[in-house]
Amino acid sequence: MATVAQIKISLNPPITVADFDDHLTDLMNAAELDLGIAGVVLPAELDALCDRAIITYVAFQWETEHGNLERAARFKASYDEQKAQLSMATGYTEWSAE
Image (tube, rainbow, N blue to C red; front, side, top):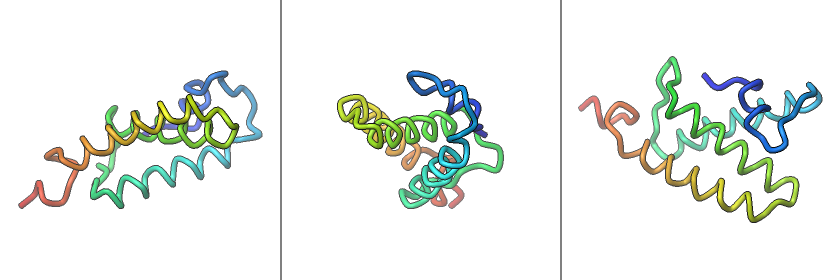
């Protein structure tokens, strides 16, 4: 599962203080909910694909909040693609068990 520490080093520039940990955790939780709305059923132990989608979602939101709209748009496009792929992939959806 993606951790706050992974998120912090993924951002540019990396965050080195704990001041934003609660906010980043909220963004990670929002990412999981957003994936769920798209029909993605996250495995109990998140894998690299799910982690990357969550990290990308957080980066998109972080850049938006800080007015870096061009970077945010690139992260959003990447996240949307990752979300679409997960929502159609066997093993990440409810319909895959049928």
